[in-house]
Amino acid sequence: DTIPLKHGAHRIDKRTDSVMAKWRGYGLGQFIHWGLYAIPGGEWNGKTYNGAAEWIRSWNGIPKSTYDSLIYKFNPTKFNPESWAKTAKQMGAKYVTITTKHHDGFCLWPSKYTKYTVANSPYKKDIIGPLVNAYNKEGIDVILYFSIMDWNQPGWRYEIKTKEDSIAFEGFKKFTRNQLLELLNKYPTAKGLWFDGTWDKSWVKQAAFADELEKEMRALRPGLIIGSRFRPDDFGKRHNDSNGRLMGDYEQGWERKIPNKIEDVHGNDWDCVMTVPENQWGYNKAWNGHIKTVNELIEMTAKCVSLGGNFVLNFGPKGDGSIRKEEIDLAAGIGNWMRVNNEAIYNCQYAGLEKQDWGYFTGKTGSNKVYMIIFNVPVSGAFRVKLPAKTSITTASLLEQPNTTLKVEEISENQYFIHTSARADNKPFVIVLDLNKKAGNASGTY
Ligand SMILES: C[C@@H]1N[C@@H](c2cn(-c3ccccc3)nn2)[C@H](O)[C@@H]1O
Image (cartoon, rainbow, N blue to C red):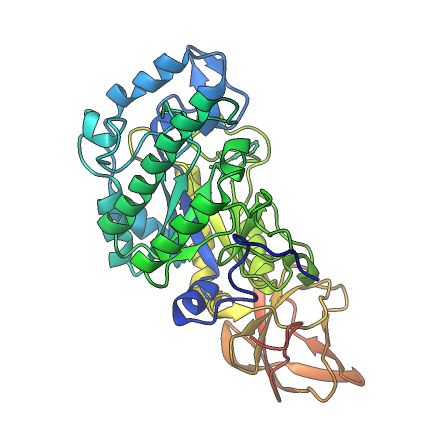
């Protein structure tokens, strides 16, 4: 039996409207982390900060006031929103999530509710507006990242302990509401909000306020997509309420990690947001440790889509507004593969088939088509496929050469080997299966 909640989940199961269906089909997205932290780029006075570059303000190696005065150095002469949008387009991203305000409180739009914005920097101009327009012109939808935690706001509190705290935090809540409504009014084509900085004790006590604000934002912008990291329930639970139901339209918990099996996603929509290095979102001069390759990132994209989610790859532009060569090259490499194989990614979901070692199945929403995205070629050269009862393979072909049919060998009841000839390169490729009926999935629908 469920716990009675005033501010728990307001919907069970996935959204069924067309705006969310489009989001569900994006497959691949781009994250942009850009702000004052890109100016030091993880380094200060020749010393390197060993955390994530966008958290450098929290480092005791740099006085807070010194960090805050970076606003007077913000003048990205190389900022070119059209070229950022073209890079994303060429990569094959269908949506972009852009930091409007990260934890440091610096606003990339000329907010009326604080002085700590681009308007008071040497750059002076709005960044978010031109970005939204440039991405929309490329046919890419925009989601606005917003950090509730705001280190620049005097009213922010990690915890509310005194009367003074609570008075200050009430002012902070008003400020937060004003900024969110301001963003929705200034950028009406934004499809959704990606919240961050909502884990502290002060915020998890704001169930009623956050619930009312979410309702107000949805009323202002029908169809708005809001992730599960925005609000706490009556008992301070986040993402899933005290009855285990997702609060928000999709699960936001997959930050720098990917679910392993379908049971891990609990029937939710979800996105995975991923850094190229181990843990750097804002620009960091020193990219240490393992830097993910094109093939790794294609595999992460395929794995996310095979489990019904979207993969969102992070870019951290430099303080001057240019995008580093490593990221441009990754976008180009992923794009080369997506140009040929995006049919196996866009508008695809969990195919409901038993995972095999060669790679990932994706199912085309509402069709009998299933894609096999191959990363590991078996030494036998034969690719195993297990189908549910009464489901059979009508044809099999290579996505890159649609008119080549591949040999299908039935090896037992509902079990097949697909045979292909050896391939010259060691790049991922896609086999398309036309089935005699929809394979269905764990929840029986696409
Ligand atoms: C999407 C990513 N989320 C931010 C983040 C949050 N955290 C964090 C770190 C410790 C406790 C709770 C949250 N680490 N990184 C990163 O700065 C980036 O914006």
